[in-house]
Amino acid sequence: MSSRTVEAAFIAVIALVVLIGGRSLLVEIAHFGYPAAFALGALTLAQTLALRRNIAAGGPLVGVQATRDMAFIGASTAAALFVLAPARWSIGTCIVALEIALVLELMARLAPSPPPAT
Image (cartoon, rainbow, N blue to C red; front, side):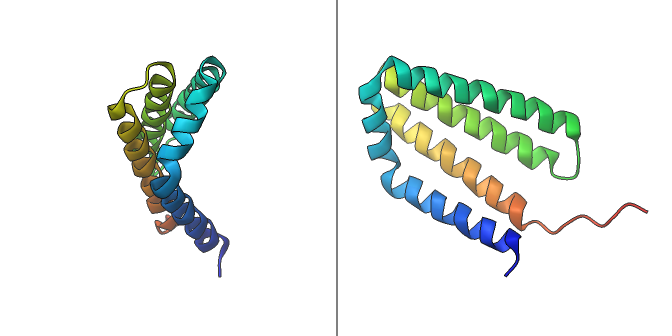
């Protein structure tokens, strides 16, 4: 079993866990208010910097990586909005955006390697 297959399996497990327990986790971190919002803001900033880096690096999967990064940014933003001002729509938005990002990551992991440049 290759390392790519193992990574893909773990990403699939993470996606399943988020689907099952994501709502409960988000409700629990909402009890921490501003510290949780600060941490989610830091995650959003880090993912924004990763988006810029991935676009600058280019490559055959740059479109998938950029879309994945934007989905992660959307998920962390929706989570921060739920922590600061709880609304039912932000829970679903966060979980869906996170699931989309994880599926895109899974697709990128399972994509065949590009042929070496000659």
